[in-house]
Image (cartoon, rainbow over all chains, first blue to last red; front, side):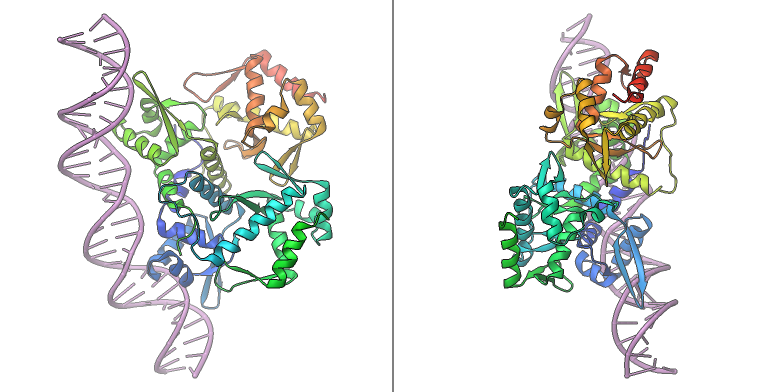
Amino acid sequence: MKDGPDISRIGQLIGDPARSNILSALMSGKALTATELAQEAGVTLQTTSSHLAKLVEGGLLRVRKQGRHRYYSLRDDNVAKVLESLMHLAATKGHLRTRTGPRDPALRHARMCYDHLAGDMGIQLYDAMIMNGYLLENGETLDVTESGAHFLSQFGIDLDALRSERRALCRQCLDWSARKNHLAGALGKALLDQVYARKWAKREPNSRVVTFSQQGAQSFLALLGSKS
Amino acid sequence: MKDGPDISRIGQLIGDPARSNILSALMSGKALTATELAQEAGVTLQTTSSHLAKLVEGGLLRVRKQGRHRYYSLRDDNVAKVLESLMHLAATKGHLRTRTGPRDPALRHARMCYDHLAGDMGIQLYDAMIMNGYLLENGETLDVTESGAHFLSQFGIDLDALRSERRALCRQCLDWSARKNHLAGALGKALLDQVYARKWAKREPNSRVVTFSQQGAQSFLALLGSKS
DNA sequence: TTAATGCTTCGGCTATGGTCGAACTATGAA
DNA sequence: TTCATAGTTCGACCATAGCCGAAGCATTAA
């Protein structure tokens, strides 16, 4: 009575530690080369090459050739969603040898999670949006309130444009380092984009770390504190 | 740079065909015995026993002893969510040797998907809810409109009670047999419960098939057709 | 007690697949 | 052309783990 789509193929792909490391690394949303991914996976380049071939063949990754480099990235948002829900599940299980999160303090403070902001700063953003009544927690889903829509448009975000995207507007995403929620989805990305645009923070090359300037952090926190 | 929770363990658990069959079977929401699951998995009882032990140890299943039977079921809604997203991903990929769905016509017509209604009847329900303006598609999320809330309360569903549940109120779920959406989440379950309560349909024992009585099907379709 | 059913444990077989060294291809630079 | 860097393919090794037969517990029925 084998029913439904072939789940086990995908599970098998994710089930290898080297491959899951690769996938986790790509959750940063950035495209990475085979050599960089070999570093992340902790295996040699040959082995990584074979893993990457399987992941592409299996439809989890896509690859773009550019000069003598090959840039790998997650194939689409569905893949990211599966990985997110898996991480959520693994985290809620506590999972024995639980690593409470990245050791690097910079990573705990602010980092990319797929394409949105995670870490302490991401959590503060999320909490503030709730506290100020901009977002409404509705079970596991999130709704933007009217005052939230007003706030966001003031901040330079075109909510209607985001709504028309295929991906979810806003979604909770469990933070590994702190076990609290931060904001994912199109809105999460848009907010981070604004933070970059205002030069409040910048992304460290070849890393998931997001560095806020001193002034940027102040502006960011001030924004969250103000009720309009 | 191994980061975040241990995804690969879970992937590995799902990655075995016998185990993924077991998990798929349990998506019906019903607790099943080891012997029944051996049937589903297509391996002997001994092998199944070892698989079940691993799934319980891995936190994906829970088991209740009852007399000389052991009833296995998915551990919580998080597990179901991961499986749903995996099925979604596998389905959207078409996945080569795509099985367009269950062969059994009864299964294609109406069946359980975890705890809500799937198959043609499920799709009709979903489409009608959208057409009548009771539900609003908002990217990948779903919102209940005011008229929808009115309709549901008329139908005997306590929306506020559902909202207070931890699980999502309503969610799209891709139908394997038809590649269209049907309604999942707490609301999906509540609607199906009402269908049972009104004796419009009943569940076949030891199967995912949901059988509508002739009169029940008529009432069901009439309900969907009416604008109030 | 004896028998039957439901399930687990043990042991041995086998296949799959992850791993790396070495050789090969491809693009770019000098 | 020659060299260097990026990546793939091949071949061999080896550990993991899935599989089943047989035997062992555990619970219920007679």
